[in-house]
Amino acid sequence: MDLLKWLIPPSVTVPTWMDVIIAIALCGIGWLFQYFVIKKIINRIVVFLENRQRNFQATVLAQFNKAIRYAFMASVIVISLSYLIDVPLFTHKASKNFVLSIIVFFAFKGVYDVLNFYTKQPLPLNGEEEANVLLPFFLRIGKVLIMIFAMFTIASFWDFNLNGFLTGIGLTGVAIAFGIRDTLAHVFGGMSVALDNPFKIGDWIATEDQKIEGTIEDINLRSTLIQTGDKGLVYVPNSYLVNRPIYNLSRREKRKCEHFLYVSTENEEESIRGALSAIQKEIYLHNKTEKEMIHVFIDEFYPSYYRVLVRFYVASNDTAVMLDVRQDILFAIRQIVEELQIVLINPTDEEWFGTKK
Picture 1 (tube, rainbow, N blue to C red):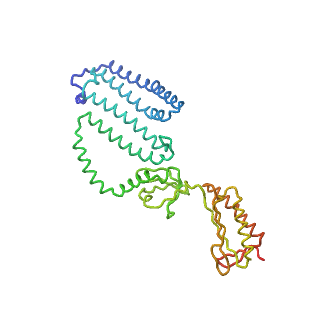
Picture 2: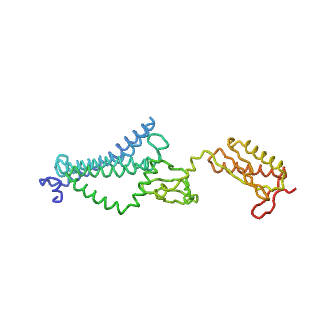
Picture 3: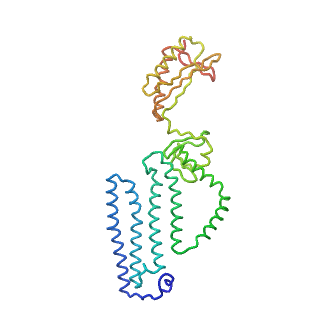
């Protein structure tokens, strides 16, 4: 009992075994009540809100579930202790501050759980898809601010001198800032990524130097988690991404297909023109190609062959669809070349291949 004199008055009634049993019984009843009554009430309210399409309110209440129950149990324990020592702990200054500190802690804990839920779930609060990047990033900052604000709020109950503490934190922060310049660069890089919104979670990106290519899995304060094509996970510092051109391949509405044919100069000009027109017609008639931009022309001339550029766009960002269309066009080109008896050449070794006259 001497260890509790800092918290409660020295005139404490020594509890009997019956008082101990009653106090334990109160705690047991309180635990059963919060588990079988309060928990079920909260769950039913959550289901009711979800049925009314109030998903945000339902999520907030669900995340506050544990905080509410823990705060209730803390109150029950304080009431049990008050009965045990025959001292109203809710009225004494020190014990009152202790109770308030517990209640404030669980209140902030509930807010922290809500922020943590939306950090792990890349879902925007306002239903706009573009908020997927900003939400997890700034909620991580919000979690840190919540912990700091909770600490200061609880410290104010105990008349803690915050001025000296804040001064020390400021001086220490300046010293630490010089030692973590690289980390700060990554953090500000992450803020740039969040504000510019060049990509979001789930996007397929590639850097200009092709060193990094993959799907965005997560964006945090210091780095971005990318899943590469071989299913590996790479943590890329945000400053690295900010300082390089980024191709957001997921935002493409069409895919370019480009192929070269090397036509021998032995072919007649009329035959070559007819083949190019036929290839262009086949590309145009395909139901998955863009009709506005189809290029089938000779773009380079060499002593023994012409280089023919075949370029078109597929109206899909799906790689499988693009490859399927490209395959169809290549088969069509082969058939046209064979029907018109166009002679092709391999410019690397000057060996002829295809149908000869």
